[in-house]
Image (cartoon, rainbow, N blue to C red):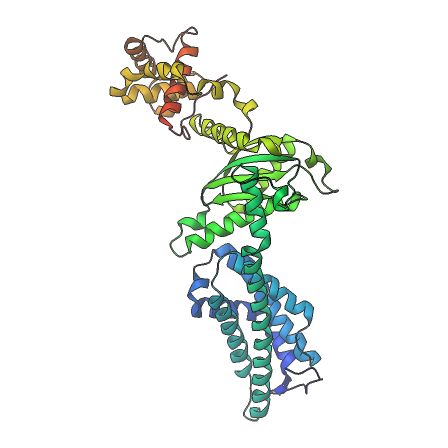
Amino acid sequence: MTGHKERPWVLNGTPVHRLLADLAPGMASRVLDRIKNDVADYRRLPPEQLAGDITAITRHVVRAFARSLREGRPLSDNELAQLTASAARRAEEGIPLDAVFGAYHAGVREIFAVLAAEAGDGDVAAVSATADQVLGFLGSIIKAVAVGYVDELRTKLGQEHDDRRTLLSVLLGAEPGARAAGITPAERYLVLTVELGRHPDEGTETVDAAIAVRRKLRRFVATFEQVCAEPVLAAMEGTGGLVLLPLSAPADRPELSEVDWKGWDAVVARAGRSAGAPVTAAAEAVAAADIPGAATRTAEVLDVVGWFGREPGLYRVDDLLVEYQLTRPGPARDRLAALLEPLDAHPVLLATLECYLAQQVNRRRTAAVLHVHPNTVDYRLRRVHQLTGIDPLQPTGLPRVIAAVAARLASAGTSGRGAGIAVS
């Protein structure tokens, strides 16, 4: 396409730009169908992504082409910038560049096919001119897409990525001082050890699971980037990992510069919603020099959260003081766990005991959960007393049996999610 005013080509009595504008409302869905038909990688994208980002940029392309035809000009810098930004997101999500090019090629072909279908017998010259404009349009798109995609890769693999990796290693004690490397860490950090559940797309056969995981992680971390004034440091994989949040905030979010746990709980919940997956996190706010110890402790707290079957959310050691102390390694924990060894041969009794504790030692609720009569619960708990010497039906026996079950779970490294032990 050239920079001078183009002749307003007409197909079957209607200017091409007006024809395209009239067809625009239904054009986006046709283009998207063509892309999914022609480009296999796009068929494996999460449906939410296709209905969101991909549909939005498809509509933008159709409208931008209609405007450029009406005004007889190439695509503007602003119109191209949106394509560049979209390509950068595709690069970040790991969609191959040839697939991105293929999608735009398929989309532009569909636009031309729809226009050509409107041509009359005497429109050969107009169809030829329109084809030339379409090719110029496609050339501009490919250039903008290539710039956005390659720049994102450079960013991803370049200095910022290296700096964050270096800083994360420094703060975790794996490398010498950050300032020696020309990197200045924040004074304090919120250390998060995170467990991320699966996004529904990860289990969908028609969706590329690797892309779904990367998209989930990108959205999760991006939520924190929005509220932190300094770089967020993350070492994440599909099921979770470690996130370091600098405890300084932009001027419009001053409450996040302090450790407002209610505020951070809301941020973590929002990050989970953005990722489309349940999130359970353990947190501790520390000076930069204390991050290695905090990373260890938050990982331990997250284990305790799992052993005791707590719901997704943000936890601190203060939320689990008794549970945390009960599960610390040592000879007392091992001996407590051994108290329940007689139940190894009676899994039904052990399951009943764990359910009884999880239901706040309420016999009727325990019976309802297990689908048995309350008398059956009484019988099983009396058998626990006979085998272990600990009576869970008496107030004097409860602290010991709670500690024994907790020690047993911690010693085995068992996740208590779904059962849960209530300690109060």
